[in-house]
Amino acid sequence: MSKHEPRTRVRMTPIEKSLSGLYPLGQVFIEDGFKSDKWHPYGAPRTWAAESPWTKFERTVDELHGKAPYLDGGPFESIKIERPFAKTGMAGYGSYYSEVPFQAGGYYGRIKYTGGFAPPGLQVMGISSLNISDGELLNQLLPSVTTLGSMVWDKLKPQIEQGGLFVAIAEAKDIPRMLQTTASLFKNSWETMFRVSNSARWKDVYYPLRQTKVMQPKFLADQFLNEQFGWAPFVKDINQFLANIINYTDRIQRLAQENGQWIRRRATLVNDTSTKMISSGGEGCFLYPGAVIGGADWTLFYSPTSSYVPPRWEIFEEKTTFASAVGSFRYWLPEFAGPSNDPFMEKLNAVRRTLDLFGLRASPSNIYKAIPWTWLIDWVTGVGRSIQAIQDQTLDHMAAKYMSLSHHQVTTRVFRQYMPFNASSGGPKIFDFTQITDVKQRHMATSPFGFFLDASAMSSRQLGILAALGLSRKKWVRGR
Image (cartoon, rainbow, N blue to C red; front, side, top):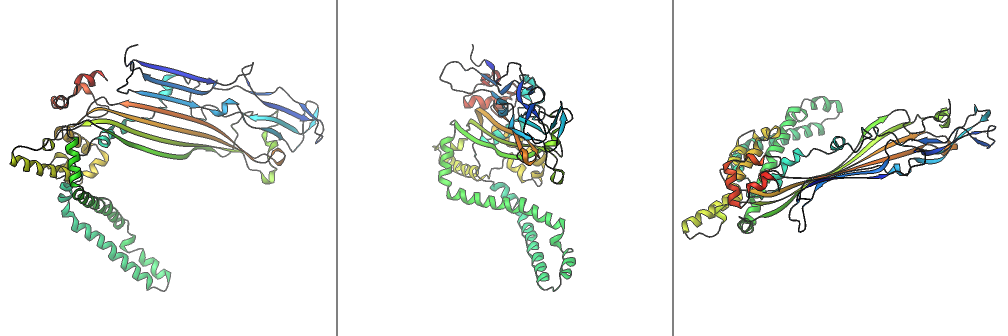
């Protein structure tokens, strides 16, 4: 096989089959005489025809990279579906008794079912087809990572500017308005507290209180925006400014040491766990066997009418997602190249290094951020990110030798059936059936300037940056 040749592997762990291909669940018995404890088998043993012949399914798509040493990675997909309950095919094994007599087959007495319950169908557990080996069906289980791909460059790239002083100075004109808005909050809050403390009756407080500014939606919205987009960025800028002053020498030295060098960086994009109920039923039983014998169903096995609670079911889903990115970056800034023989140029470079570190450059990105309301534009568009990416390429001469995005999602789906069995059957029971879907994927960047970009459409400027950094256009166009 040639290097980087893709391959697909499929592996299944089958269920232990019976000779007939059906899976035994239990046997129904009928009593010869009410409460005589003389039981006779009634009908054939209850069986279950499994919808899936496997308890674990796995498909892996990767590629071969020749012989060691392995210096680069590649795309990777792994989809595992595990149904632990399928190993035995049932849950809740035991004996269940009716509390009222029933007549059938020449006998008159109670009914007993000794056995277990089979799980619900595949569709209930979120799989829409029996043909799990169908590639298109499996691809539907792969979460989209397009949005995450747009974050990789911003998360991984070396941070030249360690502050936003240019934008902070441009927005300094808003400080009086910020102070005025905050002062109005303290003023109105104090007046409200004074009114409450000096009122003897609640109705004298409640009705006038509704008319105060503190309780008005517009006033509260203004305070929220003032805090989120006024004070919070302002305090952040102050902290960054002080940190740059304290760590000025160390940060300048680090930028100089990394200038023109390949820097490997790693970042976490998502680390989240969520649990939710995705479906439920007020009444009903999804388990097998659905009926015991003839006209006798599970209602004969439930609690007496006085304490009867209908059977119900719920489906819970816990989803854990972890995504990370790794890449190797290189940038080139002449002012960090080393001491200059020209004293004037050395002083000029010292100023430029300070401007770079504090974020004081009159760069396209800083000018854009200083324009009022551009933060609102960036909430719904990617204009700001695009401008920043252009600046990274043109002003900082930055590019990546490689970038990869890894995404791992584990979805645990639990079908829970509540059965209100009577005291003779052990009382109410809860049966859980769990299905685990484990999906891993790794994507490699298609361009040295970001994910999901066309490397063959790079501009002459971008090609020039690649040449200056010692990268090959052929590598990106034809693949790694």
